[in-house]
Amino acid sequence: MIAGAGPVTRPGERATVRLRDGGPEESPRYAPEWLQLREGADATARAQDLLDPLRIRLANLPGRPGGLVVHDLGCGTGSMGRWLAPRLDGAQHWVLHDRDPYLLHFAAVASPRSAADGSRVTVEARRGDVSRLTPDALAGASLVTASALLDVLTREEVETLADACAGAGCPALLTLSVAGRVELTPEDPLDAEITEAFNAHQRRTGLLGPDAATVACEAFSERGATVRLHPSPWRLGPEQAALTEQWLRGWVGAAVEQRPELSGPAERYLSARLAACAAGTLRVTVHHTDLLALPGPRGGAA
Image 1 (cartoon, one colour):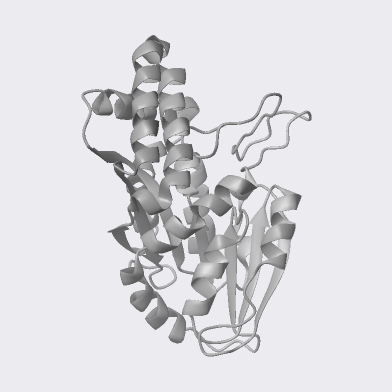
Image 2 (image 1 turned 180 degrees about the vertical axis):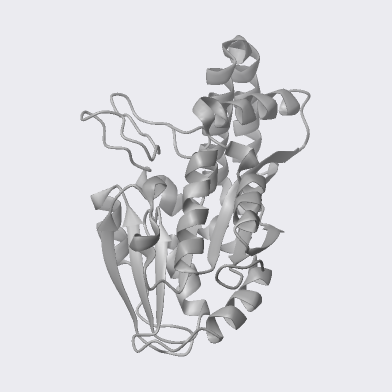
């Protein structure tokens, strides 16, 4: 599983969050329990300050009979739609993209039915690999959204995404990309070493990990978009103990996978951190970055 992206698996269970085919025996998937566990923290963290410029752009789009058409890439259980659709006015049609048919079904069933002004929200599901998106797939799109997606893409795949959005002439709101920085209180001498090993694990096999927001900013800017970046940190305390516990297990586990020599110290570290979490004395800030790309005039710079 991608480090820090989900709960530790049970014996005999294999969880992955990869977007690429791993062979016919594998079905890449986010653990739905993890997606549900993190939904509240995600909703609180997403950058509200990016919504006003997005609303202004959407309000100035040419009128469409069916209202806004929003493509949600790697939709998972549909948390982005549940967060964003009720914050936008007007009728909306959400196109949900994911490789996992189970998650697509969950997202469609649990999607919101009304916009901020009470207008109707409808959905459809499309199964496919979002890393191979084309402008044709986004024909007629008003907006592209994604959550916790950019950091599990390669540079080439981010450029493919930027090409598709530029070709469709639509804005992109891409939230909760890992930023490579974590703050734990109280501090521990091993914090920095675990963070460094985790970040290296995130970058394995060419994935962008904590470089994702910077690379995406460059890619969209090069294609004429105006790009805004805004911090969107998780701030986890006693009320988020279940999420903190699972995040810790994945975070430390990934660091050890990257650097096996950390195994002994990391085991003691994790035990102490989990005890502090259970006691309600641990605070964690996991930094993320949200990105809003507003396309420039067709064929010109922003």
